[in-house]
Length: 204
Image (cartoon, rainbow, N blue to C red; front, side, top):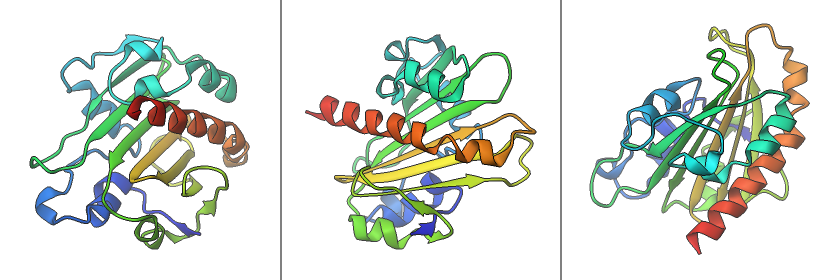
């Protein structure tokens, strides 16, 4: 599979809108802490102590116990809400940002958006370098980003399932070994599968 561009919801989803530029989503980047900033401005999305089910947006789809056991961190705060969208026909968007409350990193951001694009279009938009994942949606990938962003390496995982795109990014503190982040792929795949199942159940 190919490597996905870093700013997936801002760039990829514009290409995947399958409607027109007028109906493309605005903002909503999951990279780094952008989702934290967006989610915090949404009505009814003030940070809450986990239980994630009490937070808004995409937060209730995340298994907080599994997140903590996978990362070895104690995530305590979450905020989420609907992402910004333009036009009555713009696809539904949900965001969530989860933090420990002790520092900016580690953090987890989750972005969910509906699309009229097909899985083939989704796959065509992936760039070289990403690793494919089996048994997650119709198409899925992961990649570890090591760019100098002021934080440590970030594990990005995305997948397409039945007209919905999911984008998850776990950013570590500075100085984290990239190999250790790669070792989290199996655990985050379980988290992703739980998100997908919970989203499908909520959608009925």
